[in-house]
Length: 471
Image 1: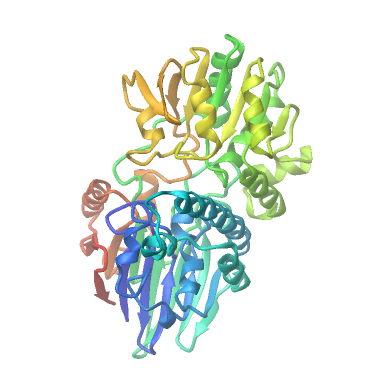
Image 2 (image 1 turned 45 degrees about the horizontal axis):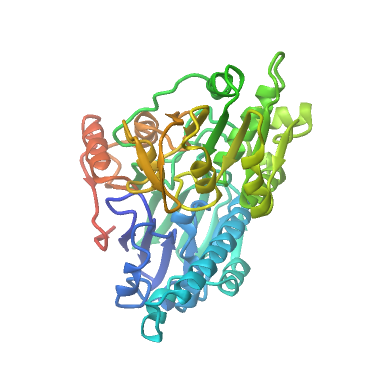
């Protein structure tokens, strides 16, 4: 049995791991978009992928985020004919995320085709990674949802079980068991590990002892700073921005997962005595679709959320909440002259409607821009968070930074160093044959490795892209 790391190797994005069984059966665990290497993917020997997609038998998906699911339509384009296994909520969320990505691809291709530099010579290079809605149709038709905890036999010698991971609705740790040479080998892929007491989501569930563990390390060198309740932190920010002064609170937020955690927290907050329900504009059609899916799968949420819905009737609907549908409605928010909250995507302020709202309000001293998640280097979000930034070019114009820029990690869906360590400590160092660290910056991985070595774990690898191991 061989394991090869084709994504999220010494970086955070693009999860993709190939497990080759002795029976000539190939399983791809996650098939994510590498946000840093979209065009470099055309340089691979086999087209978009560093392997022959037609030889893959099965895809197992840990969760719906694009850096884990985003290349599945292209896998089918390249010759894959198998199924995609995931949990039920992951199937629905992946559906809306892939169609949204196809829509973005269409706009990108349309823009490229108008460029003077565009020609037939370069058409295939630019269009190859950009799948269409027809490609997504093929992908979603082949997704097979499974229940958490159900041991499913997917080949003559192998089984898979999905275990709740927190992090996102439907997200799973993937336990694979393989019979080889009369021995049952157990391999666990962590997926992205959630954190305890997160709004809406259950805590990560324990995993059994395994022989091989593939563990994410996004927060491998940091702890969450904000330890107070999300509602208390958000209440203070809203008070400072929208009550003590007639300001606007602008929150760049990912549409799937993060926005729902925000809306649920605001719903609880607005139910408290003495809290004024300031108008909330949720400016993302994708967020609306994701919210409906969260409502559909209430049984997959944590006990607090289930009890709240039983008592209140709605998890996300409250007074003064407005969903913006069209671009025209989105732009009309600029003319709203009362204090308000604007929640819009993307969370990294890299395109999307949020860029318009930032451009319209960055010079407003009464505005506050609240970051609630990770921002990749070189994105507009990362630049805005730089200390002492005085001006930026946004949407083609140079603008002064007069708005207050603040951050909180209380809505981060990733477990921190303590959570990651707790996850690994479910394993016995003497039993674990190999521990692989993935999905993190290299410095984070090295720090996490040092922490684990202090806990007596010895066989720890930080694989490079394309590196293979015999299991």
